[in-house]
Length: 78
Image (cartoon, rainbow, N blue to C red; front, side, top):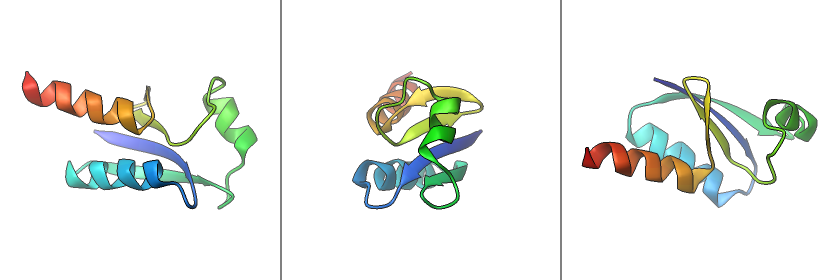
């Protein structure tokens, strides 16, 4: 499984999402707004995005940190 994380500096939810992915052993690419990526590029990828992080797992949009955590929690229960 591979992940893509749209993030920005000074974003605690971005930090939590990246830490959770590392904990699960999932490699991820980070696209940091203001660090070589623009908000416009994020909106091209996720037109409905209003916040970061925006997280993709294997090319499928999961959403933000809360949705990522819920997905992992659900999978661990099953």
